[in-house]
Length: 248
Length: 306
Image 1 (cartoon, rainbow over the protein chains, first blue to last red):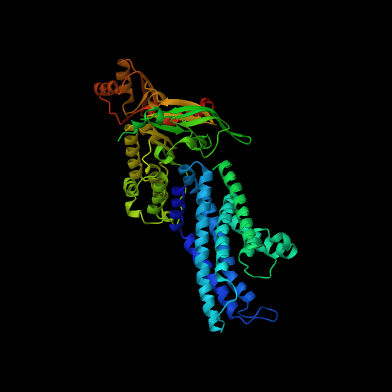
Image 2: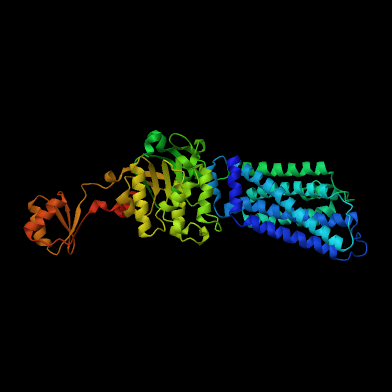
């Protein structure tokens, strides 16, 4: 398994997907955080420097990073089907489930690391921008928020691998994933059935990155468990399907 | 290093009553054949005849509906070191942004061989100068060379190659031809499909012919191409040469304005008869060398008869 993980890391290092995803995620995360601090809050919005405001600003890093990692996870598998390199992977390791597990393990680690880096840079930048606005203390636990972001990033990496292995088609997987996250969960279910939505992947991720928030979310340990169950379930399904499907 | 270190049986490919059905389509129908080590075995058949399906079943990329496809008595899944046992060229792709060297570095790790093998195989297939170029910028021939490099990086004992000559320039074909001959002469098993029948006739030892998923013929090329087939002689002096040949006991048929088909005698006898008759010989070829005609005859016998 260690050799398979080495291979996956080498594949990531020698393709532009990791670098492009990291740069895009960091840029979006920084942009969102800076804009949210600098824009004067509207009527009814939390005041700059309040717990709710800091929560909103810093959780952007987690949300953007997780979604970027989710797409990277999709590319790691569906990209192999697209370029037909998956055939070489399965010829080298005929026990295909192992290949999927290795991709999962790699993306879990990469997701955690990338989330940590994006969160650290975004938070450091946001703290500086807050300081320029006269806010020198943020009433949220940055460490707790960071831990939640890292766990969320790792789980989204696993989810991306699972969705990529299930769909096999890069475009369909990315569009399907974004529709699931942004439309089905965020736009529809979080408004129509919030008590149900919090048990879904986005809802669980929100529970991980909502420190001291008044939102109706699951506790952090439960959120982590729910997200891991989602990831494990989808990965098991993807692994089983990858083993049974024939390559043509 | 000879490939026979593993023993003959460990290098033998065997298909035993392999059936593969895709819905209503019968891709393979009780197909049985053996591929022996130390020989180049060509796998011939029209498009859609089941060649690629057979190779995919052998490599574990698809499961047979019935029967077994084995390498050295094992299914591909059971091989302890797949890439060090079997090198395959199918239609594996390449990450277009990844350089040839990086692609091979990955395959080297997959095969569990040292990174130094990368430069060795790049040199072997003549891609050293293009090693740092992206595979997406490669021509068809260069991609074929890279695929071959990937197949041999694990120093396998068995090669399974689907249309390996496709896209190669004459120099590439010559290089591959020599490589495969050396590989087989060292005891390795070479199983290749190709549409280039002339190439096969000149270089393969054995042939397996398949049509509509069924075995049509299997055996050595020498057996497939009958030695007793006629010799086609091109000469402007057909009358004189015919008379001289008939005097030697040859059977002669006029098959064109300046062409005779001669049977029952060797080419040496034909040459001596031409000297006696003072006939000029412009060309001579064994009719039986025409693997294309034999292939056509085997897979479309009715059409040829009619």
